[in-house]
Image 1 (cartoon, one colour):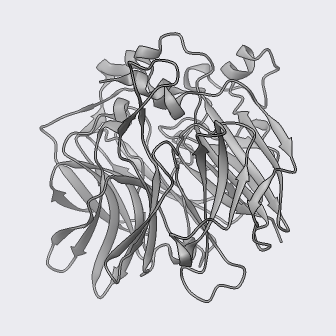
Image 2 (tube, one colour):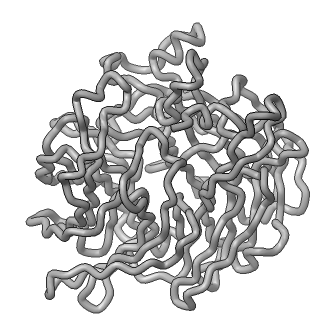
Length: 452
């Protein structure tokens, strides 16, 4: 495995925190985009041995752009100040003290809920609260339960109820926990779900009446604790889909071909079936080299009466980080969006005989009713990340809105925040907001609208 691919090219970390105001724009920022586009990812604070670096263990850094009334007011990037990050930066620690054995700068997701901003991770590690300007408040109790669980990175928001849901696991604990939050962020209820194989869980599915649980042969292995990523592949275990009533109850398990579900595009109920559109890494999955696989988009249709699951390949181009119009989450929908994740070699500016590896240079729009896919290609060295869909202020259709994402501009050596018209997906961007720095390829983010 070539782990140093995650220290080169546009995976390479940035070393400075920057604040810039009144960002230059090519095109025009839509007037109805008022809020913050935030994304987080691993950005190691120093690299002792690049050849042995595990990308997912890099300290989290948030990159954000503030849009208001057609202007790009600011760009900021900030490390999340865990205790160790604050110590290494020579700064006072933020917030309450935490057990340093389980303290880490979250690097998986940044989200807003109840008017507050959070950096999230998984495995029972604490979320961190951020200010609106991306400074660290400190570790927080979002989703904290008496059993020691917290909100997991892939929370799901139900627009109809105002609830937020999380399916959380803890390293080495033989059950997982479904946590439901009130609109204000307090825990409404929890359900413990037996998990005797200690599975690694990253995402889940949420419908009107069910929770969907994905388990695989990727499980906790205490013998790997010293590596920092204590999960290994056990060929003796099955890949399974669990379907549980949303209010709690018995889980029905269904065996599936070997593989690992990375992310859920959407899940919903349709005529007595439960449908999950998921990104699947077929076969064996290596968590320390997540870019080496070729994940594809599949549909899993569960006939609960017959006790059967039908799998269908929706698109075979390698892709990940699926998103949709959040107002259709948990219900039948038509459009989904994802990032291409094809690896390719690209010349290195510093080592001509040793090329870097590009990872993502396009985003996709899937019309799941017509069965078609459009690709917005940004160019070989563009390094396009996850896209987020933002509805227009008064949408007339499901795809009436915008796709926002960070895209590397190789000519400038810095990133643009690109805004696409979702209904004219392959057309030239509505706007390219030129950032003063590079934004490395990262993980997840969200559009957080200005509070009304």
